[in-house]
Image 1 (cartoon, helix red, strand yellow):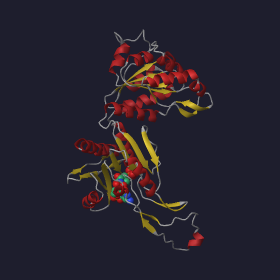
Image 2: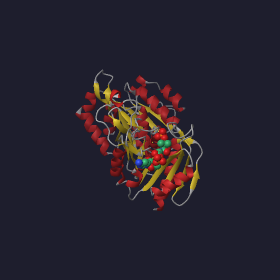
Image 3: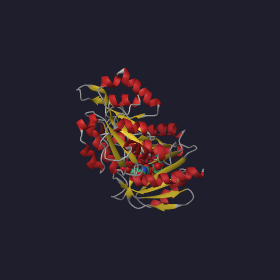
Image 4: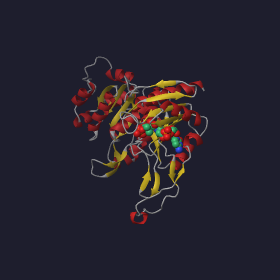
Length: 400
Ligand code: PMT
């Protein structure tokens, strides 16, 4: 997954916490996504993790000792000037205090003070230090100045206690960096995007349900790609996948629950993209207790009634994108659905393929539009498919 981080200059400030080792993973993920990463370290950070680790990960010399750095001239000004974003992870109580008071006695605080780029901080400390009035006041001060806090989260702390103060997981931090860069530079900044994902579950009884093979991966990829372009994303999902950072997830199970959630979210949406595999039918009277085999005999008949068609029921002033999952006559069937559902675009998906469609990371789709246009896409990642769909949505919104 690249895109928003490609060729961006990110300064990662590392301060002295036991969580400093996680900064290596954060830096590695940023570099793998195409970012140019410069690491600035406090002296305390060097006690926890060596500059060599970051040099190996970034191919660049970390900024450590203000008075002995080998770059001629004002290294911190140069570092701060070329940053598209500065992330301080982990940010200790002491580093937050230095930032709040404008102190500039190490490369981390110097760069934060000198940069015009967005500054994001991911605190890590014991819960009592985090709850301390001084830390909370520093947080308020920094937030007023536009510094974005990523966590901390609650969980196990190095002190052995449990509580708020744990560094957010590296993957979530990188997701929020993507979201912030998207807001600064993305072509969907300020747009509201609603995405549905996963197969609905229609209850037969409290332990059994009817569903389908949708994993939710295509819907999640759309949510991530829209977030990376700066959109405010609501993901209405039945899937158990981890919620992407910077995305609002609404968990639902059945088609009826999904309908209610989409109806609510669509009111303010610029686009609604329906990648979910919604069951066309549900059991007409689900049992409120587990059905016993002994009571059912050797045949069970479950009566089904039709579910509402979410893609038809939810209308409004937004660009509607639907999917068509087909095993035969892909284009004919998708064209009929495009018209019947009043959509601007339909993404036709041959789900009989083994390398695309349900469950896998790749997809091969054809995008049809309401004006008769057709775009056949080769096999690509679901994130790349998402990008191609969003390109079309952006064009449609621009022409509205
Ligand atoms: O989740 P993955 O494992 O990544 O797989 C991705 C996918 C194959 C599920 C996805 O790419 C896809 O094709 N989703 C649509 C699946 C589907 O239900 O297609 P359909 O042809 O039955 O429905 C057409 C459209 O109407 C869909 O946008 C669907 O969300 C919508 N629909 C269908 C029935 C219903 N009652 N209400 C609806 O809104």
